[in-house]
Length: 456
Image 1: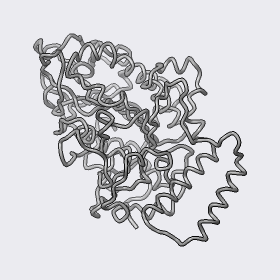
Image 2: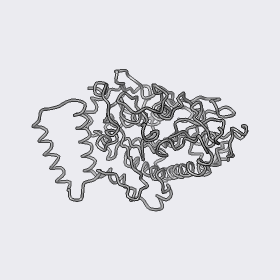
Image 3: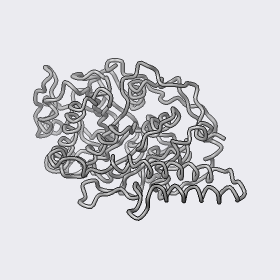
Image 4: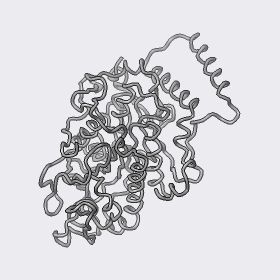
């Protein structure tokens, strides 16, 4: 049974995708899950230096001109109020809004010519994370079991295919999923055509909350491990007495059940999600806000073995600055984003994890070069910036350029698919040689893009 046979025509409720058991699906059931997937390649290539990915995703579309690609020579209605500042790499300047990141430019690679064609938030987030357009350019869309999977989903799928047995989920989203208005969830971020067992674990909680605790990751105080195992054995004996059921729902249920039981018994997941084990100084360094604590949680998760962790910078489309772009960026958006990003880079480097952890900073799209009548900038997928660090990639480099007002790529156009191909290559996977199947049976490569060789 493959993913196409299991999922075709089935609708999976969003609540099910978010559920604990759904997210903790059967990576321990290697033999079962092998039957759900089909590939044309086996193990990762030895050349990959990265082991894990942390995606810092900025829902709503941050302004590239006011952050990574300043245009000081542009007209008044383009350049905005922020001046460019020097970084610690001669010849590279970024916005004065990012003074701490400017001093870490030697670790960063800025891509200034990223572009795609969809300007609605959910379609834009889909394009950025999946690497190809959604079938309609709309915000009013939701996930379905026919979706093409995002690169986070695929990294989790690859980990399970290769026998992942870590104590934490291979793919985690914190604190909340990509979405618009918390009603329309971005397609692609869940299992999609690969099946519900490849959904991420979505935290769906604020890790900065005083009472933050991920439920169901440990046994209740009155329950011992021995008693729990006895109950599992009894449940297994009861199941054997019933008529065997082999369909999509039963396979998924068995996978969820086995994975959840394993995680509860080992206790590793509970420890990884427990931010109280960090010192107050470390938590303060990341910032006492959900963005900062999500970044800290991401570090803990990759340290514990997760392969892909997405930290969503803001619930819903918080970076959607149609009005008061400059006031919002300066006062509420950039400071926590930069604080968490800087702390993550420093922490990974201090722990000697930066070489094995690829950090990707990304958004739906950029924002218009022309400042509108409300001192805001509107949606602009025609050209925007992305930033990569670690994972064995080159730092202290700018790849591609935009035109004089940041409207279109001027040199070296880069697609989201090219970014994904680079990520897969850095992890040691051949983006074209490994395939999965859509619900109609079509084989699809991990990415249709071309790895960015300047970074490798």
